[in-house]
Image (tube, rainbow, N blue to C red):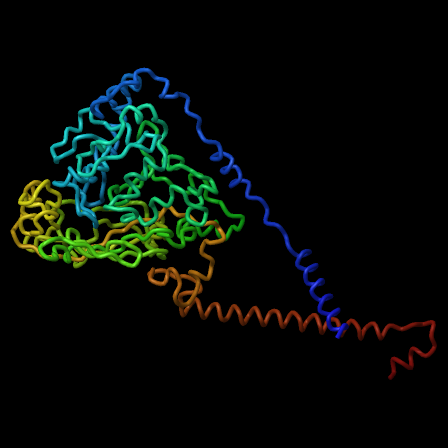
Length: 538
């Protein structure tokens, strides 16, 4: 009994010693350590706006705040007014279509459809004041909203359906004295809530990232790098680096992982070579919507149901609206595995007035293919749904959704698609036949946030597996471990046979040579011994 216990203890000790001897600590990644040092130090403001006497007064309107800002920042409004954040469009080039201006002014999306004719509600996410129609004066510097991006008091917020004006409860004097560099709160006030609620649109941008851990986002984690959005999305002269793919077409001024991490971030060169065809996000964002659900589908065709003549809502088990009379039915998901597509950085959007040529309308198309040398595999959220369209002119319809009162043709008041479609297209200056139906739609959202710690990144077998791999639905190219190819498989099989044959042959030759050498050694004649000749004869 004691002997067995001692043997077991000896084996355990021997195993531990062997593991300790064979274990080698991973060498420090100096590139990563340099980046951590670079972003560990936060910028210290060089100006305390609380000390500026010009800001110590009662502001009657938000425009007065802007005018006061411009007394010091005399030319800054020109930079802001040259940005897409202000203009809601930018010049784009699409092969076959030429150069044109596109943005929220004229691009339709797969959520609230479009801003045109609904500005008073949608302008809650415009960096200006008083946008209540599509005749907004984009040349009026007084309407530039400095506070929405620079308020550090966390007190400022836009009013609901107030054409971009702040809520009436906001203390403008306190906000004006508390401005500084943009924080996550500033960016998140629009980008977290785009589409009508938290995490509705993006799936990888939501309120949890205001205070999350490394499991959710290694860059924004409060117990990690705690980086602000503007650390990556730098904005020299108020021109923001990194653009939303649903409203930008050209592959210029994108924010990329390689900007900080270089093209050789791994010690393993095999992993680095993957970077020629695999985006960093593909492996390092294995899932999104890690904390709160994101909206995966939106069916406008279900909207308009009433109970006792009144609109109503239905919530799922997590408290998300699964049905709203004003918007239709939705599907929400959490901890979602991305889908994957080829993408070369260029895109195309469905603009108001474009013709429908397919059974499923792509609201934005991401260009790319395996044969395109600029293309890489990226993870995306694909949002699916349906929208109202003109069955005669074959165009998506921009309906009037928001209105101030019943009877003004707005769908959210009257629940009448006919009048909402007619009024919306009239305001947008588009023809309408009076005949409508609903058609399937899709939009593509590349995932760039919610980067996981490296030990939670995808491993080889997540893709290089025969069935059920992450890239199972991405076809048109040969993926080792997943695909079969008769020629390659035949060549591989024979190479394996030749390799085995070579090893066996080599081993046989070595063994034969050793036997031969041993026999020769036995035949060495020792002339000092008389009996040696007899041995040889035997």
